[in-house]
Amino acid sequence: MSEFILQIEKLFAAFGDPEYRYLLLEPLVFYGLLAGVILLAIGLGIKNGKLQTAALVTLGVAAFVQLPYKEARLAAQPRLEQVYRVSAPTRVSGFAANTKEWIEVSWMFKLLIVGAGTALVIGVNRHRVGYGLAVASGVLGLWAAKDAMWLNYQDALAYHPHLKSHEAPYEKGRPTLRATPVGSAPTPTNRTSSRLPAATVVEQPRPAAAASSSLTDRILPPPVPPSRDPQPRTIKPLTSF
Image 1 (spheres, rainbow, N blue to C red):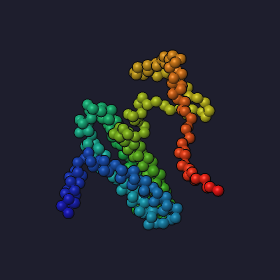
Image 2: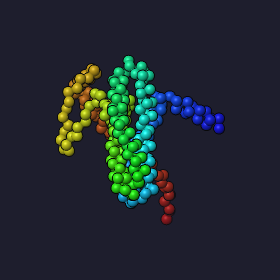
Image 3: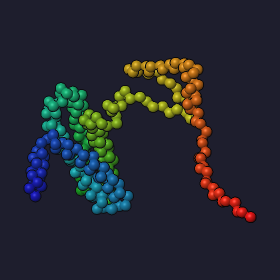
């Protein structure tokens, strides 16, 4: 129980840090917008008022999250520039460019808040204006979700070098393997080796006597049949007539 309370205290302290707060809020923006667009499309398709209301609320809340996210990102940028100014200056310039784009597209999220709120007040199914605002909010929400995911991907390219768009360190200088057709011999490649060439063994000729002796040594004599001991015979004396 003490470990649980300690973790909760650390999390509350981390929420006050803008560097962690902008990382925490960023996925809520595009995930919330995507969820709102999907719910709104389903609600308009089946003409369910409660689902349409939930979708518009989700769109408005996700668009509103972009405002504190932008403020936390701006507050975290000076410290991030101090950390990576020497080791990775390209990250600093990339983060600053993405922050500038977040500021430039902030009008889209503000307009989405106004459109979703107005559609809720008028009512989607009660008036054509409300229905039109709901559809426009869905289209604008999809557009804003695309921009939010794109900017998130740009940050990921800068701070996650293991992504496939980067060349992995183990792939540098790695030979490319080519398939050899069946039935064809592989083409030899000229390779430089640091090993010394193997010594050539020259077999000296042997004299004829030595060759014949070695030949006779190899020929085995024929097998000798086992000897049989003669059996003693009993001599009987001649009978007299």
